[in-house]
Every structure is written in structure tokens, then in C-alpha cells.
Image (cartoon, rainbow, N blue to C red; front, side):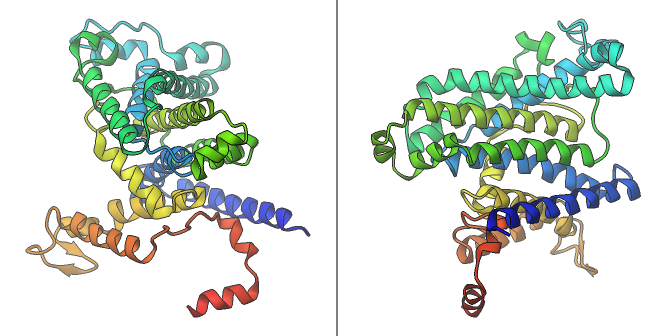
Length: 369
């Protein structure tokens, strides 16, 4: 059996086990259980981290605009899926809002309530991704002429401007201004999140392994050599930026599902820094690393270390020490340790199936270090 077939079988087996475990969790636990909540949020972060890794890790473009594109996806999803009869209560300060239809209700009319509603929700997610991609195209025309830190500053500024723009009351009939968007449909269980994010990540993996992906990597490694080989730098940079933004927009829509309400405030620069931190911890240039780091990050911050803010941790009751804010201090120390001892991240630039490539002697040698 060739190594490629072994990797394919190994990957398929791992994914099947993880999906089966997620289905079992959904069957045994209620949707509000902390395990289900962690899986939902970690899945959303995985998709957004992989989309950022496509841009930062595989193309070498240092962008900090992910939160802005997630904001576009989230608002597009909320605006297009709020039921018509609930819009007057949501848009109470803007006379019921400017949008007089709901995609899930439209498709439910001729596909059935359950199937039609699901199709409408998925279509709204795609619209959010396309809106983010369109904005990336417009922003990318001037911004992608910049490099390194200048590109990061420009995209970060764009995200902050977009967040303030969506809170502008002149857009209230659509965005509800500074008020919350709510009452839109969501997936209550974790399995739809895992399936949807898994499909999106699989598409990114296929892209990376295609000729376009190899062109992205060539640009990352050496722009001069890539251009000498006939790669159109401007075209491929723009393509990577648009595709990354598209998946970030879909991630934003999934984030809206997870949160249950939409406001511009959570989509600030701190969210982008969290995603960037996950990419660095997992390994710049590793899809598997981004996914693993997302689950470790959310598991630690939302569950494992939560007791450090409530006075009790691992059976120890010390309200004088374990109080609000102590969790993030401990978490910061853990991150520093990871960065110091795993400078290339958990996976480096390798993927999980690549572990099958190592020969026994190499494994023993690495174990002895």
C-alpha cells in the first residue's frame, strides 16, 4: 500500500471517529451542556483560524482583518434569516426594518419546513461569505500593494472602521444600529457545526494541494523567484485574500449561530488576535495544527480554567486567589510556555497524516531528544 493511500485511510478513519463522537455527544447531552458549547465554539474558531492560516501561513500575507469579514458574515446571516413576524420586535426603533423577507421561510414554502429552513440558513451563510469576499476584493485593490506590517495595519484599520460603520444608526433599518439582532434560526446541536466547518476546511485543503496552493506557497517562500517562474503575484495575492475572507465570512455566520444574538462589539481587534494566537500555537502553515489549537484554546479558556475566576479550581477553594481575571493570567503563562518550547507551534508546518511518514529510527531519535 502506498503512503498516499495510507494517509487517506488514516485521515478518513480519524474524521469518522471524531464525527461519531460528536453525534454521540449530541445524543447524550443537552444543547446547553458545556461540552456541546465548547465543540460549537471551537469548530467556528477552527474554520476562521484555517482561513487566516491560508492567508498568513500559506501565502505569506500578514492580514489582521478577519474580525471585519466575520462581522459581515454574521450580519448577513442575521438580517436574511430573522422571521418576518419577528422583525417588528427586533427592529422596534426602525419601523420593522427594511428587509421584508426571510430566506428560511421562502425555501420552507416549497421544500418543507425542516429542509427548506435548513437550505435557507445555509444559503444565508453563503451570502455572508460572498459579501465578505466582495468587500475583500474592493479592499484588496489598494491594500495588497502594501507589505508586512503595513498590510496588517491597513486591514486592522478596515475591520475597526467596518465595526463602527455597522453601528451607525443611518443603517439601522438593515443592521439595527447599535441594537442587537436576534430571533434568527440556529443549529442547536454540535454536529451541524462540525459537518459544515469540516466541509469548508476540506475545500481549503483541496485548494492548498492544487496548483493555486503551490503558487501561494511559492509567493510565501520567495516573491522574486515566484514571479520569475511566471506566477502573477497581484492575481494570486488577491485570490488568496478573497478566498480567505469568504471562509471568514462563513465563520462569522456560524459565530452568529453560536452566540444567538448579533452585535458589532464582539467583532473587535481582540477577536482577530485570538485567531492569530491559535494559528501561531497550532503552527503557521499547518491546517491540522490550527484545528487542534482551536479546540485546545477553547477547551482551556471556556472550561478547564473557568474555575480560576469563580474561587474554586480542581477542588481547591481559594476565593482570595481564584478571582475574576486570574484565569487569563494563568492562560497567558501557558501560552508563553508553548511559544518558548514549541517555537514552530504544536504541528509546525506538518499535518497529522505526515506523522505516518516518519521511519522507526527517526521516531526513536526524536523521542530521545
